[in-house]
Image (cartoon, rainbow, N blue to C red; front, side, top):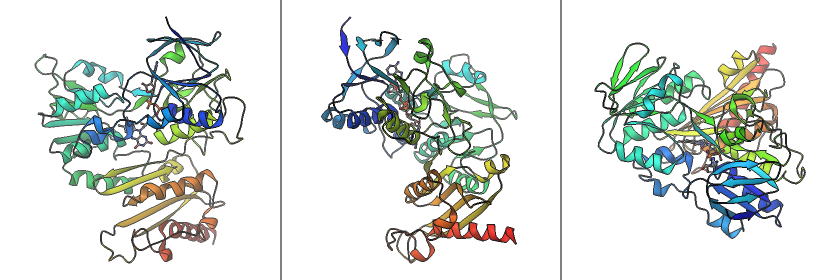
Length: 458
Ligand SMILES: Cc1cc2nc3c(=O)[nH]c(=O)nc-3n(C[C@H](O)[C@H](O)[C@H](O)COP(=O)(O)OP(=O)(O)OC[C@H]3O[C@@H](n4cnc5c(N)ncnc54)[C@H](O)[C@@H]3O)c2cc1C
């Protein structure tokens, strides 16, 4: 078997592996970096739902470009890493043996299917949303002449799939175990707004129920529908299981790397495993929340990229003191023309955890004056500690700008900014681009939260 040498070996080429490689190149220009990935073409995972409708229309339009990395002198290899000898520092792949000095696991995640639905995986017409071009192409082709689709799971991937398929003319039903969609990320009043848009797009939403059986009436291994816990039966030509993801840690387990909670690889703040020559980043690592440090199941490309930046600069000693201190679970989605963004702790979560919070919320317009063409409503909600006014979470509903506005709130959370500082925050505004400076929604929501704190103190 051919043997290849490198200094830094990165197993996996999703957002976490890619960012780790680029960061390592910037920090250690003299080191030889090799990224190994299983498949020639790597999909942009976040845009997979948009392959199914007219937005992208094809996986060919959703491939991660690698050109810039080649220019930076980062090598890539298409192969699967099958085994590792951690003592002699050699990886054995389907293509060659690779000797390394430092290794980063960036092996990502795989669709999670509850045991009760595993029987469905052998049926034609049942698909998961794997980050794999071949599987996505197969699902897309299969869907081509089918009409009735059931999406199982009301997280953001299930919702995005449902809207995209309904918009392209399919009859779509989405089923979830909780009362509202996007549970955990949005409080019920905001999730209800998202549901209204979902339904207006033609999607049938069934909450507080769950699929207990995927039906193959004829015994021909072709799906015909699903049965719900309530007894309802829904006919389906295609069933999409969007029931979450689990860390892909087969390789790590095989070579004895310790796991943490929820099956992720145990890492410290600098993404080091117990062996400081071995790191883990992205969905394959065990995560904690930023605020309370409790185990987290959040799997996001944004979190994975941040972890890649920490690992990529900590390989040969701790270059920056700030490590990765937990996920703030920041993300955005579009439902129809409306964007929904969320970060940190929701009001429901804060209450469940017994945290004494006040809410500051503000509704306005995203342009000024409101008569500017295409101006849209904008709503900001801040979840704030009563003592000290620290911002714990935020939710925004509005136009596409919410995707960036939520990042402002994310930074406020990460830097421990209070509403007292946020109330006099300076913002750039322009009629065609933003809300009015006099009514900037994040500032106004902070002011409303301060009012709440003061009222309770009286
Ligand atoms: C449909 C969908 C939509 C999403 N939308 C968003 C979004 O809008 N925003 C957001 O922040 N996140 C989103 N996510 C989540 C995000 O995609 C993941 O959090 C992210 O992909 C994790 O990155 P990663 O690099 O850790 O792992 P992955 O992207 O899973 O990549 C893992 C890599 O490891 C490789 N690999 C695994 N095992 C081996 C091996 N033994 N040998 C060699 N290579 C191996 C794989 O081939 C792959 O290259 C979405 C996910 C999906 C599925």
